[in-house]
Length: 131
Image 1 (cartoon, rainbow, N blue to C red):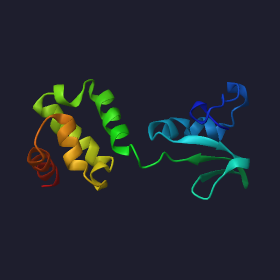
Image 2: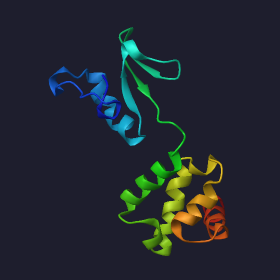
Image 3: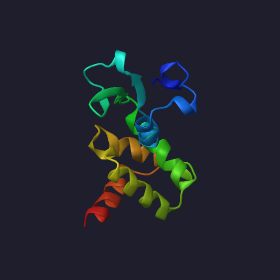
């Protein structure tokens, strides 16, 4: 069950297993992809239905993870980070924090650069969230 990101077309909708159809929105949201059962690697997450491996989910590499998270937040908030109001920038930091962005190395600095604010500003937003 490979999808377009793996370079192959998914099967016609009627041939898609119900488990694949059910988890596809989550897989798409996290930037992962489906892998055929025959192509599973140790780091893939197998999708098991009634004791049979149907396919697997391959998580995206960490490289570029912060950029993907920022892209998702920008899409959700309807604008590029530097163009957002102060309140929306605070909301963006909250969303990024909820999605685990700040566990990544240099995330505060990179988010500050993407927003066009200082890292102190991002730390202040985070402190306000965690109070």
